[in-house]
Amino acid sequence: MRLLPLVTLCPLLLPLATGCSIKAGHVRPRDPVLSSPADRALPTPSPWRGLLDDPGLEGGPALDAQRARLAEAAGTFVGKGRVVVGQKPFRADCSGTVRGIYAAAGVPLGRAPAVAGQSDTANLYRYVQQHGSIRTADPAVGDLIFFDHTYDRNKDGKANDAFSHIGVVERVLDDGTVVFVHRVSGRILRYRMNLARPHVRRTPEGQRVNHLLRRKHGSIPEATTAELFVAYGSLPAAPAATVASR
Image (cartoon, rainbow, N blue to C red; front, side, top):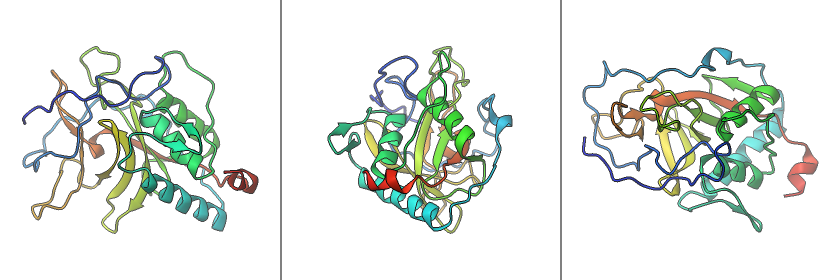
């Protein structure tokens, strides 16, 4: 595959603050059909993968309404360079974009206690694990979607960088394909992911199944969205006062 030029994705504000990097391996959605991927080696799984749980959420109509607001907010920012809510600009990276989308929908995204060297994406994972539902199946509109190993964050030449990217689920199609919104290559874009066909980018008919999320870099192979997927995360419905204060 022809290598794409390096692009600026999301500038580092602080070493602990983001889940993206200016030397990342994310790519724009301009990749060819992947024809022989069945034996492709998958990246090293996240060390937290065994901690996944699903306590379940109860919210009824309030939770449904919150999910609809999150999907609407995510779609509003597609094509833009960063999220601005009111007069507040959010950090121009993947986790800053997610925080801005949630703020636009009136859903507070807090923080878990800080861990040295941990990205904001990892912090958001722990926050949702503590306050909501983490799972690897049954995606819902408005969910956070987490990815591992999307770039060489620790610069050791290995695919061992957990919780390096995040987005927001906008839609779930009838065939199980998840459409999510995230910031990549300096813009907020829609990507697709289908866990039933993780190695396939397009069907023979040309239908997009998975986007390429990591290009080949040294000994690290290219990988699709489904190959780098970690988990979905849901939060309970925000208090009415929070929503009304947007």
